[in-house]
Amino acid sequence: MMKADISSLKQQNSARGKDTNFADFWYLQSDTKFTRKSSQKTHFLNIYNTFVVTNYRHTMPLTATFQSVSTTCIKFFVAVCFVLGIQVVSGQNLVPNGDFELFDSCPNNMSQLEYTPFWFDPTFATADYFNSCDMGEMASVPHNFMGTQTAQSGNGYAGIFVGQTGGSPYREFIEIALTEPLIANRPYHIEYYVSLAEQSSCFPTNICMYLTNQLLTDFSTTGYFTNPLSFEQTFCNQEGSVFDNENNWIKMDYCFIASGEEKYLLVGNNYTDAFSPCLGDAGAFHSAYLYLDNISLTPMPVQTVYFDTAVCKGQLVDIDLTELIDEPDNTEPLYVWQDGFIGSKRTIKQNGLYSATINNSCATDTIYVQLDYLTDCPEVFIIPNAFSPNQDGVNDKFRITEENITITQFDIYNRYGKKIFTVSDYNSGWDGTIKGVPADIGVYVYNLTYFNNVSETTEIKQGYITLIR
Image 1: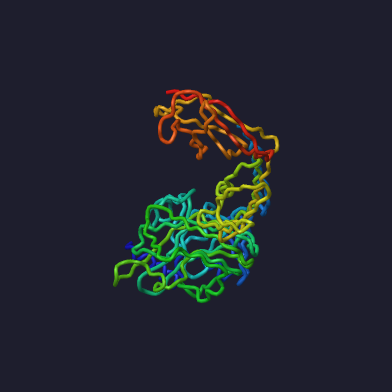
Image 2 (image 1 turned 90 degrees about the vertical axis):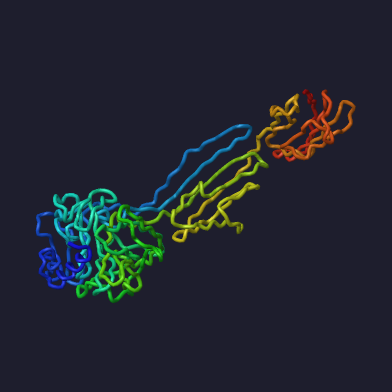
């Protein structure tokens, strides 16, 4: 079968209504109840114009959890303790059978979406279900009538026509009822995977997910929905995208704030070919087909993070919020502190409670940083008694390493009590020169004036340093 003929054949079958592959579809239209003909448990119940999906699997309700990381203390001339707490609200996937692993009957032909529970065709056009249980190559995985593709995970996936060049509009959609309505003003995350089928003869530029507050069906068409206003939320790929990869699965990733009206989910392309063209050779009829797998809609975590640290008074604390709280990869969070400071990184100089909000376009997380001062931190000096400024890279400078103090004056005197050098860069120290000229070998006196950060007093310390070469 040529590439361009497949969607045409499905259109013709839909128009005639005689293809045996559409048997269950006709039950859905004409019977007061729609049930499987097999002896397996019923998954759907349909009273005309009212469609209810009953989920027989165990459903975990939305829960709040609290998680803590045990306190860790590090002492190296200074005590530093961290306590981190995270409170999140999270939940499971609200799309039942979003991975298409469940099936009532093994598919063996096109147009058998109804074989995988909970999913159905919302229009007269019929989507396809593929699973490795099919021993043939019509509806199997990885080989089927639309090409070769392994499942993104597991053994099954769905497939739909999403675009064409010329001819009567033909679109396929898949629809499902969520396990529970979305909650107003709560953030949610959508994720699913698509892959271009090998038998596609043009490259589609659009695929969307739609959320509605009621069952959306139109069995009078194999094309578009004529009332898109019934879409509560619409999520389409980025403008300018082209789906031209037949080898890999492409992740579609969105987050949003629910209105509280969302109850059903559809996947397809409800835009015209003029708005979302299928890129192919001009003047010929072409069609595009996408495989779909691992569709999920989950409540996003709403995080409150607590960070507590205790340091010796006067020490600076560098905070990087990106290391303390995880934000979605597809967002650019805005970090705003309670004092108006904007940014994820800052240096805290005073003790107290700090807070920041993180807006990731879908949710606003909060982080609290408590900085406490320790009052029993000792003065710490590491002062050598000799140095050798001979440019060998070893002990070439006279430097003082300190903790919990702030040096305010650092002078060098010769043995006669004359000040010969003032150290301006305390980290660099004295290089053993006097006005650029190497000083004589011998013993020198240093005079150190410093501020004790804990006691908040000014102190003086003196000692001897030997210069050798």
